[in-house]
Amino acid sequence: MSKSEEKYPLSCVDCAVTACRFGRTDYPDFCLTKKLPEGKLDSVLPEYFEGEQIAKCSVCSVEVEGEYYGQMARVEETMEFARRIGAKKLGLAYCADMAEEAALYARILRINGFEVVSVICKVGRLDEGETLRGEANGRVMCNPLGQAEVLNQAGTDFNIMIGLCAGSDALFMRASKALCTIMINKDRLTSNNPAVTLYRPERRKLV
Ligand code: SF4
Image (tube, rainbow, N blue to C red; front, top):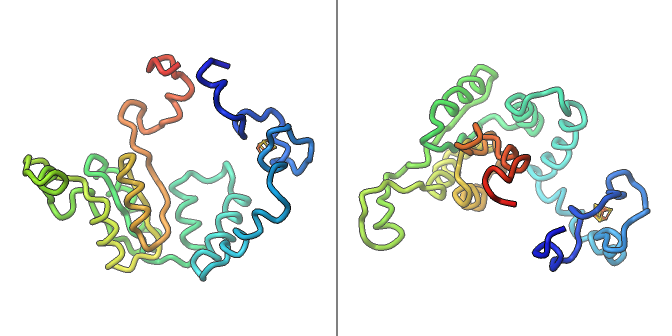
């Protein structure tokens, strides 16, 4: 463990037993489950059933994972989940740099019986400088809140993000009325596979 790591309190990533995962009780001393006062998490339980959409999501996410883990590609898994929660109209919020992937997925979704409303990140053609700093700079701004608003107005049942950048995705998820999932996490250095950098962090001089 490096010096900079030592100053942080231990938590789940430092756990060698992951007893919680296997339903055991041989927790380490710093275990977050062990430290929870009795009933402390009870307050979140009703939240799994807060409204019809959330209740369906709670049950169907577990079902789809349990039935298809490692058998369905994410493209299929997302459709299966959408079917089970009764989503018919799907929103596709995508990055302009991933227009091709978005069009491909829209086609697949339509062939598989879904209605698709798609919206590009540049929707509204806002000037970035003018919007954020009060002085136009000629760059068209990514507009995740606008994307969410378009899909909210369309009344989509479930929204799928394709390639929204870090931060834009956060704003989109916050503003979207429908539940959201990520189809593609854009990462131009790794063919959209951010985990690659975790496997070889020395290549980016991160460790
Ligand atoms: S909750 Fe406890 S047992 Fe589970 S991973 Fe965290 S530290 Fe380990």
